[in-house]
Length: 102
Image (tube, rainbow, N blue to C red; front, side, top):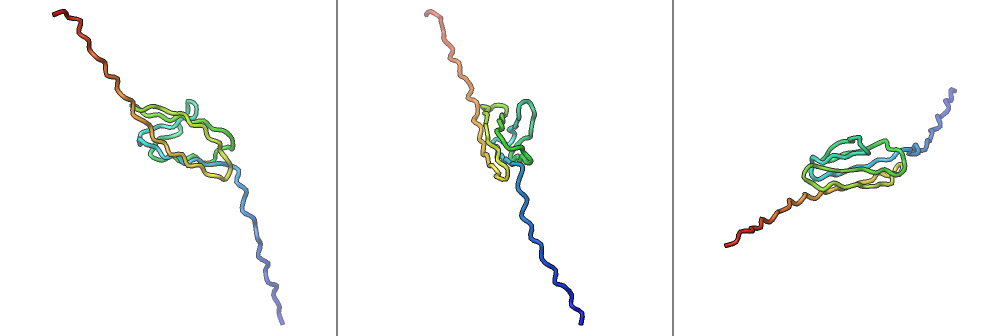
């Protein structure tokens, strides 16, 4: 009689995350995302993966819109969703004053 040993299933724990992720939803679609002077990408959606844990400051801007800065705490294994809606720059209306004497 041949008896074969039953293989023991190996259980492995899932890997411990070492990096973070930020998912940025941008409006307007042409908005640009910078880290310092480095352009990271443009909208309407930008997924930043493989980020080192810690504080990250991003600058988001688009022509004709008020730019913003966002500071985010990047946590390993905890994706962060950042919705951004930039506000249009209001055009200044200059009043014309007449100094004519009638």
